[in-house]
Image (spheres, rainbow, N blue to C red):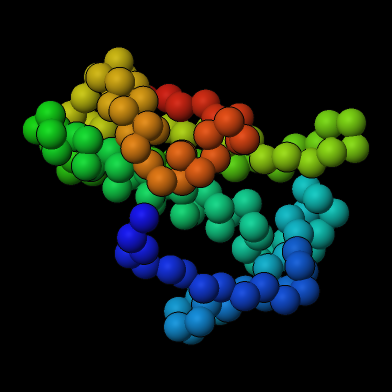
Length: 136
C-alpha cells in the first residue's frame, strides 16, 4: 500500500471541546447537539463525519460516472449520520442520498451503488455502519 495523503486532526475536550488540523485549516469548537443534551451552537462529530463522507462519496460518484459519460453538473450527495443507542451501546448509522439531475432515480440508484463499492469511506465503514443508499 502506498500512502498518498495523511490528514492529522487533534481533538481536545471530547464532545465539548475543539478539533484542530495540523495545517490550521480546521480549527473548530465541537459541542454535543441539543438532541443529546448539549448546548448545540457548534459542529459535532456526526456533522464532521457526514461532511467528510459526502464529499468523498461525490468524488467516487464522479469517478464511476465518468466511465459512463454521466453529466455530473449539479450532482449532490447528502449524508445523514445518526448517533444511535441500543441496549446501552452506541453506534452510528448512515443514509446517503445521491441526486444527479440528468439521471432518473433508478439510474442514480445504480450509480450510487457503484460509487458505494469504490468510495474509501464506504469501504472503511462497510460491515460496521448500517448504511442506506438511495438514488433520487
